[in-house]
Length: 360
Ligand SMILES: Nc1nc2c(ncn2[C@@H]2O[C@H](COP(=O)(O)OP(=O)(O)OP(=O)(O)O)[C@@H](O)[C@H]2O)c(=O)[nH]1
Image 1 (spheres, rainbow, N blue to C red):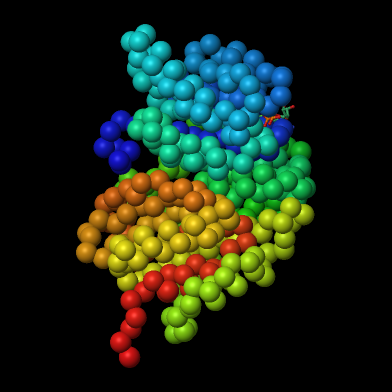
Image 2: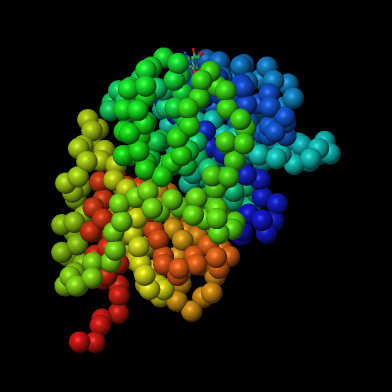
């Protein structure tokens, strides 16, 4: 369902490695008038509820503490119940619904499971929509953290917006080195600099699925990525020969943890037959789902006036959202892939495999 078809509550997922400044930012944010009716869901890692005590100081806001473990890996089911209980309590008390939900992940979390939960949990998907993933990166330690921890790379890779924090601790040269490195992992994410958590709450909003043409461009940022097209002119691939493409290919250097973040935009000029789209994505996700960190697409379907927005994390896709016609005014479908070591050719060859044979 389209977010404006029903009053769904926007969700911001706030991620970033340990010590990157998430709590500092949240403490500032929750004091802004725009955040008055927000629900902040935080979680702890280990026994020290430092985050909670700090955020709880702001008594205008409902803060739900998850009592044990890490949101993304041990208490995913509880996450749904926690948000549900908070919403129901508010309703019983006659309060207005939450204007926004902010989920702070632990510094060690891979955000993908949280995004899966938002897409697949029946209750959550009926009440909330993802309005964006915001990732904090410490200007001083960000480069070494990215090199050493794959969670940190994944957090950056799936983000819609990157906040470079602690910019007071580094000079311009280090800052621009970090900014360039972040752009190689995630070329489309807007980068903002933040000192001591000072950020206008408006920067938390509008990272999610597009509701009108202009936002659609901003959401996809297709032009920021390396462009690839169907492998026109190449002999159709047998499925067996595709297997060789599925190994991580040459490209950006592997990190110590074997991650090789690659992103690209696959462009298809002609409207896509719905069955081709379905079969291609099915096979792609079943063969490569674990290595596809995020997919966003605006697709022109053959025989359908309204384009569709697609949005997936690993092998899970959000139900397609119909968009206004102007969101795809040139009729070209664009798929942005952020992957761990998937060669663009694997995506394009698989697509070609499902194309109807051309009469010679
Ligand atoms: N110099 C400087 N220090 C900052 C800034 N932002 C945050 N800090 C400090 O960095 C440390 C870590 O910040 P937190 O906000 O606790 O980071 P976090 O991401 O919540 O940390 P975890 O909960 O461990 O993941 C704290 O001592 C903050 O005071 C900044 O802009 N400049």
